[in-house]
Image (cartoon, rainbow, N blue to C red; front, side, top):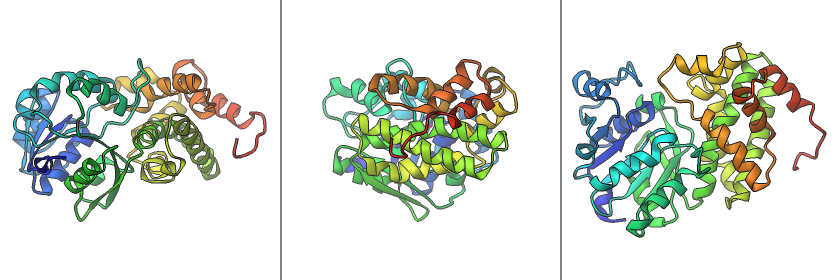
Amino acid sequence: MPERAVGRRVAVVGAGSWGTALAHHLAGCGHEIRLWAYEPEVADSVNGARENRLFLPGVALHAGIRASADLAAGLAGCGAALFVTPSHVARATLRAALPHLPPGVPLLVATKGLETDSLQTMAEVFSEELSPLGPHPLAFVSGPSFAREVAAGLPTAVTVASRDAATARAAQELLSSESFRAYTTDDVVGVEIGGALKNVVAIAAGIGDGLGLGNNARSALITRGLAEMARLGVARGARPATFAGLAGLGDLVLTCTGDLSRNRSLGMALASGRTLGEIQAATRTVAEGVRTTAAAVRLAAASGIEMPIATQVHRVLFEGASPRAALHELMTRSLKDETG
């Protein structure tokens, strides 16, 4: 990665809670931050009140952040660009950004999820769109990291995945601070699959919590959910050990147990009797697990992989199954060896 990749101007593309928290963190590391917001009112709020009142209310943002709803302005002169958009708009946003990116600028991607139509990971989406430009510095950020805790400067550790070791190291140096530690890996597939599928399991864990099924059930869902993630990941070329790391087990435990988890909260709301439509109509934030569930079930079928938890979450989200009936079906499946 060129030396300017760790330069002091960083474009953060996406001003949801996670993008805003990363912008705040990077500004605190001494970088000059240009934060692109899809919503003009978010850019105005960040610049005027030093607060993202829509997606990260109550957090006083660093003065080194300048926000804009103009993508070209946000990317101008950047030494690195960090993409943090919802997965379903990642491809379109990248296409819109490409004409404005400085040549060869390294891209970091902190979006987690699968593209519903293509069933591609974000790594596949970005690699495909960037392929006409030739080899491009590209890294992916994942791991247990609630936006609000990162913004508060609480200790956090993540994984940076890249197939190029120099790119991974440069991204690691860009992100790391006394409170934010980044580890590197070359297992892009494992990190991407783990970061996407943990949201599906978290919906199931939230359903279990909402139904009052107890700690035993939550522990079982986390453990068997991890097995599902690893099965699909290995079938797609990942290393099994990756799922025991930050982007696998670490992110899964956080998302399945933390009160700040949008996907767990969605599951709890479903358990209370609310429909998916009602839940989505009441919030502007995105629970990535909804779209990822639809993609994961299709990807598992295409890969010949059994994913019973994802299948039951799909039934609740999209097929009208009751949460209690779905979990009952999980518990009454034919008995198996644990490694199967």
